[in-house]
Image (cartoon, rainbow, N blue to C red; front, side, top):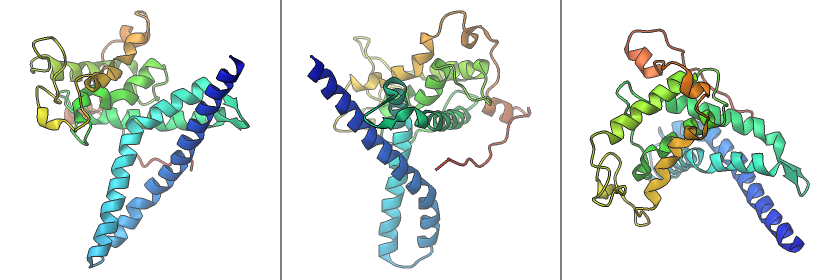
Length: 243
């Protein structure tokens, strides 16, 4: 039994080390890829365009990781703490800062009507794109720029826009493949009806008690409602990661 726990602990450690390496490599690529792309864009040959395509793919991969992998990374850091000679807790604040920034970006993606940009190959997961925003609300660690009332109002509007009238469910009551309705062409070869339920990640605030400010605070306009409604809204400044 003791050997089994040691083995499990070692596996978790190896996973975290691998993710940690990817964490730093990805940050470096994210920092330099924009500058490299700008230089090679002005060169005249097919080879620079090949490099451009590779770097563009890297950036798309980083976006995917920011919505999926790094959220799990944060959860594992919180659960693991330390062991095997590495104190993972020192990375917690940095990872929290990154996730909070992603939450700010996602909140700004939500239009006054409750829509958000449909980007990437994972569109059939629907609301899963809002995972970091929902996660920060559930963890009660929303950044100071976002209030409970505005996040709840924004996510609620997206839920209504997506599910109120569209044909998102089949005759058996299960989700159909699509983004906002039945759109089977959005599927990849590995997509199935089970994977569609990643959309439930946006419902994480349901884990908060009924008397929590997330539920009790009055609804407030989110950023795009303010911006398009002629109201004051916070500017979005350049953000530096502590690389």
